Image (cartoon, rainbow, N blue to C red):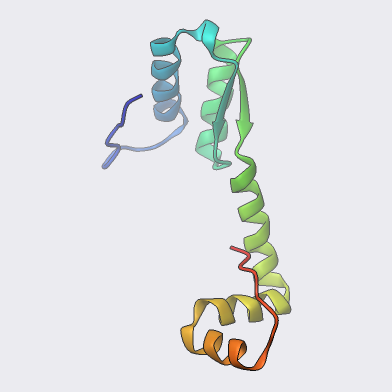
Length: 109
């Protein structure tokens, strides 16, 4: 619908909620039932501000962002994931792996 250059802006909850409310008003609040953002604290706060203004609109955290955060956490705490991430992020290790293995590594980032 529109793009906003936020460079140099403080992207706090109030700023983000103003952008969301502008978009909601642009399409008509009666046409909106849900706002989805990532799970950052400022976005959660913006979602709460939108919900407080419109009792029929709900904020939902992005599922993909949630899963990405979980996988990043697992990647830093589980050794086999660290090995997989090393192999998939380095071309030489990928080449060696593919030469000696019939398996395929799936990327978890």
